[in-house]
Image 1 (spheres, rainbow, N blue to C red):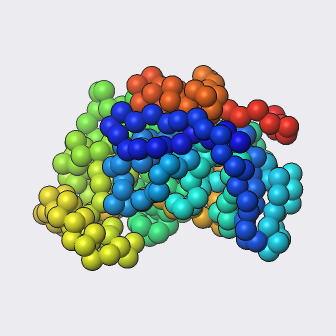
Image 2 (cartoon, helix red, strand yellow):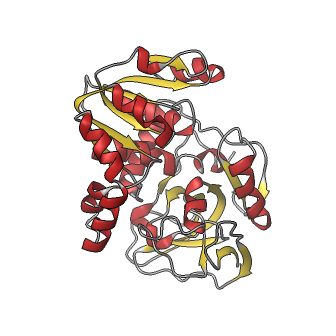
Image 3 (cartoon, rainbow, N blue to C red):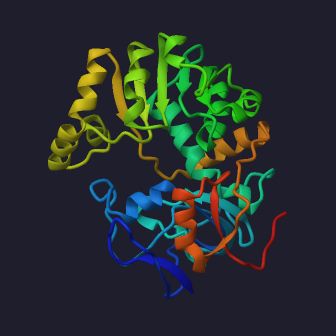
Amino acid sequence: MKAAQLTHYAKDYQLEIRTIDRPQIKADEVLIEVREAAVNPLDALLGTGSLRLIQSIALPHTMGNELTGVVVAIGANVTDFEVGAAVYTRLPFDQIGAFAEYVAVAATAIAPLPQNLTFKTGAAAALTGLTAYQALHEVLHAQAGQHVFIPGGSGSFGQMAIPIAKDLGLTVSVSGNAAARERTLAAGADQYFDYATQNYWESLNDVDFVIDTLGPQELTHELAIIKPGGRLLSLRTGPNGAFARDHQLPAWKRLLFSLNGRSIDRQAKRHEVDYRFIYVRSDGQQLRALTKIIEDNAIVPAVDPQEFSLDQVNEAQAYLANGHPKGKVLIHFDGKEARS
């Protein structure tokens, strides 16, 4: 089978299209024939080696973290999936490899594709959806009546996070561009700030949580609006000592992350705010819970109309980084099955 593999870390890395053996499944795994694989900023972080301290991979390694596809074989111990099932997944850390014609993956890491999604739109749901779900449920422990602000929340993350937050009973405020205002409010946001004309930090205060999607440049403003005892969760700014402890990393990594995150922690402490970083993991049961939210709220993630083949994987990654896509960038695989 064909696969796009990373052969060495580099700032300007390129994936190589190689012919490798089709994976053999274990008793608790399924074999998926890939239909669509999503391209994510996470792929670039892995390819440049930026995440080696968090997720180390042996090279050469097939890349790609998120996919939809069809189950074509099941292991002896798998009872909740059948051959022919349409599924979606954020692959486990030790089984990434979505940029390939076939993937072997633990059955506990996948879920049936939501009924209102196609292979294309479903490929844009798993990683972002799980990030939002784990952020709100596991890291923030959000409760009904609390208030969350999502700067930059008019994009793909907010599209999934807003209905999950509303399902928990939260008040949701969001900032973004003017074009996304009505769509974001229709998704359930209670308050919207146009970043070009409004400074959210002049209107918001005493929010319980901020989920940062923008990075370090926004840190000062985000901390200023969180109530004492609140929590700032970042998808972009980077891990700290708390992240290393939460993930039970070795002592030397705990020390290193503590040093790297020291400046952020100090700023947060001055505001009496707890800082956290999230690195989302695979979880099939959470995907099933996410499926219900997707179906109940008729969520259809945005997908960029430009189509790429596996042979064009490097062009797809460049397009994600520099091309201003209008939704999730996908790698399309031709297959026998179809879902319209």
